[in-house]
Length: 355
Image 1: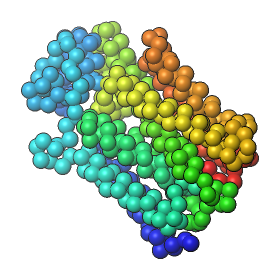
Image 2: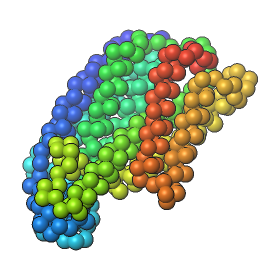
Image 3: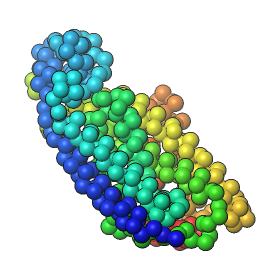
Image 4: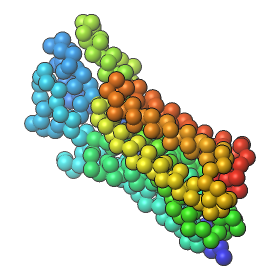
């Protein structure tokens, strides 16, 4: 029995969520567009010394706050990364902090929309592409908020996390939305829908977040290398990529991003592993075999293989950095293909579920 009132509340909550995410995206974008005098002074100081390592640290290292390593003159030693100032210590409401609060409020509404959808249908809220998209993006935002609370400097990634989440929600509300309904008979009376698809939701969400970080890592690494090369060549104005370069100056260094990407993808790989295992067990229960080369099964296995290659490459010294990040992005391309083309174009045994 579908509770239509709760279903309407869910739809309304998700629409308001989109509006708040738009405002948060504007706030994060305004924060990135602004320049900081401290970083500019550090870059000029490094230029005067013709010191490439110091320039690299000034360009990508985070401010250490008053009295910290980057608060005064730049030395030959790279300062330790620290939080990007957000106005919280001075009582000022910066654009970044305001956007972060908006993102937090939007995430609360997002989770409310997912929860009320589950209550309206009296089942788990991931039985079709619309529900899968709304639930996985909620997990992405929760993960981002948790990371950002522990490490304030990661809030600078807000534009690049909220943007993809907003895009997926708009696609879900425009193309994938379906009325609240009960499970199809083939999905009823099976506890594996809670386990198998629940783990797949987490795996997909972490893949989205990890791809964002890996993509920024690649850009930041190229930006850092170009700055160092220009200073080493004796250029007086070693700016790179114009405004885009200023945006990258506000982000954590490529080393920090690489470490974060590795942690996220490590957990995602574990989730993809259990997605395969639990899916095989469910297939044995439902179809009488563990593996049948169904398109969904094949592409999930391809995703697992690519992420396994990424983790192996990351553990090999010669394939760290940009090479490993490229594999991580290849895995995300496979994830996108799996949940778009495979779901909507290629027919298979999973087509009935809308997943």
